[in-house]
Image (cartoon, rainbow, N blue to C red; front, side, top):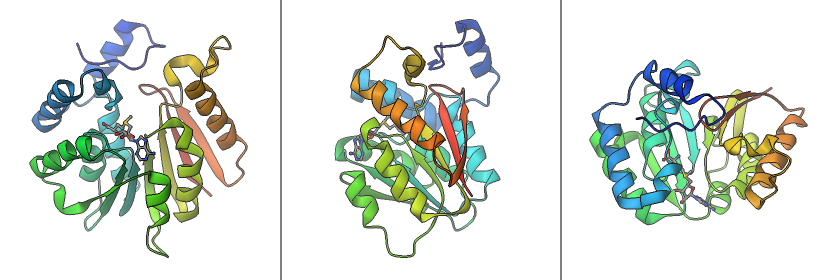
Length: 220
Ligand SMILES: C[S@@+](CC[C@H](N)C(=O)[O-])C[C@H]1O[C@@H](n2cnc3c(N)ncnc32)[C@H](O)[C@@H]1O
């Protein structure tokens, strides 16, 4: 049974939805398997199968050439983004883990996207500041430590072209954001981030019930 992150849906509906979405290819299936073997319980951090086609299609539709990902892990989302890049497009990936991104780099080769992907290792808040002056971003995907979301958002928004998009993962946080009895650090961080985006007059935002919630944010 495919991994289902939309816990707010009846399980049968969630499975139906995944079954009627383009399925992962052999490279993504092999990556999902190796991630489970290599990282155990941490594998739950990986994108679910319904998110992959979403990232590829949004990248294609937006004709993005300069794409940034914050939170690469073993590479699933980066492959989906890279596959949607316009000709000549580039994906710059940020992650703090050399161990996990070593797996990603092998799978970029297998997926045939290594020539258009670059990896920056270290705390993303610092590495993002090192992007060259004047380098703009067409599309960004944020999927790293939840406390860092506001910082990544501000840095990326300042680089985003008008009409550019930021996609943010896990904004429903297993439904906890809407449950007043839950009050842990990560839930508070996501709630504060969601409220911050809502109050930001520079953007239009749309929270999508895909997997654990993806917020799509467009800069005016
Ligand atoms: C949810 S996982 C990303 C999953 C990935 N998008 C995928 O599709 O498999 C979060 C990642 O954020 C990284 N991370 C956590 N804190 C970070 C930080 N301060 N700077 C950069 N990356 C960080 C972790 O190493 C981890 O790989």
